[in-house]
Image (cartoon, rainbow, N blue to C red):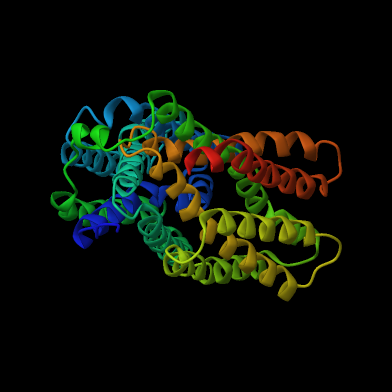
Length: 382
């Protein structure tokens, strides 16, 4: 029988993860603020965004080397301190005559040593719990709530206070996280290593295959979702209407992780993964031809519900074969890396002048992730 987790430790890990991932949810608004408030070009604003995301991904990849070497509470205090300093500098240092190169450096370092560290640490801490699948579901649910509030409140704050409308909430959230650091579980490498029953080669092989599945899956779902705005505009739906549809779909997508948390102990992981990813493929292929606003919103809701339903199962499958946390800490890198690679592929597809290729590409890579799971992962993890 699976041991129960200490609720306060799980909650602390969820909060630390939210502190880290906050800027990912708010990045579209931050980019807009850089353009409107600082007067930088769209290209420069996207480079600032890329620098931050790249820093977070690199931090997650490097997590393999620091996750078991240092005390988790010390890592959390360090990451939160960098988040506070980086966002404070961004708030006051670039209000007049902004330096593009300096802004890029500040955001890269904030992502590398701040947001990326906390995001990766939160994921690793949840991966080390006794019920990682269920706890990942709670984490995703918390992030959905945070993302919905970000989409609702941050644009209004930025219109009034400039980029401080994004950076000050990041600091405020970091201060909340600071209070919960003391409740983080204490990492003990010897305990996790002793509890690992697989042979040495399998300890390495299975988590890496799990991370590969995550990369391939995100190559399909992430870029497709991020291209829903131009798809809606191409179908004559106004930007405001698209924004409302995506806000509603994001808020409604909390059904996904809540359903996952209720069903994780009752359904087979393989059935859940196959079913949810198949639904995603069907929804993606349904985004074709003329579409009404209602049709657009309903599809977006179903897509995001399936996305947030299957996420805990996919993250949990890595944690289940990696009790050390050495590989779970790289889950954010696999997610961000997959989205980044997928964007590059879609950019080249758009040059062909046939936007419908995005649907076939995204559906194909989700199908490929299913294939890799059943061919290389499922039987070896049982």
